[in-house]
Length: 176
Image 1 (spheres, rainbow, N blue to C red):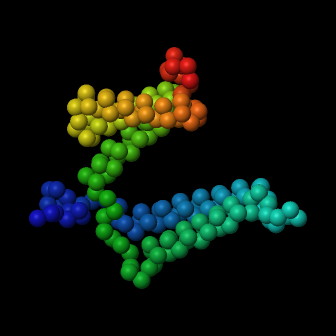
Image 2 (image 1 turned 180 degrees about the horizontal axis):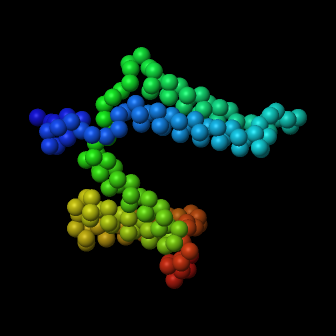
Image 3 (image 1 turned 45 degrees about the horizontal axis):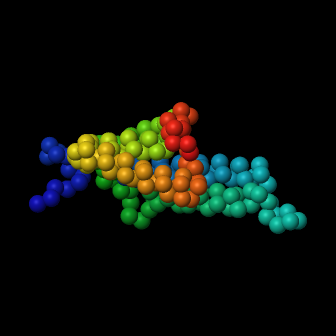
């Protein structure tokens, strides 16, 4: 029989932020982002000009929609018909699983700047397969190499679209 996700493994109640608190925080973030978009679009010119819409016209309305949607989410999270959802949003075990994927992805994005897309992807795929997928090192390295070789051939050779090689350009010996 499967145990409930809201119960901790030790048999007690799970601890963590309530769902309505997280929903309200995300709603505030969406509203703030919408306000930033509105402000930036007004700087660009959000009005209708003699030539048609100004360069900030459509971003202004997208920011307005984001702000209104965020306000609606905020209201629903705190004052909705269903009441406040007091269930735990995420427990410690769930957050560990999310972070086991999120942190390496963040490191990968940071690494692309320095060692480029191909090498960072090779390391990311290989380590992901070994650590999270529990594959052998040999299979992981072969799979990571094949995936990156395929993408290299596809983009660099066939489509003639160079992808970012990083500040150090460790693949410069290939001539691309």
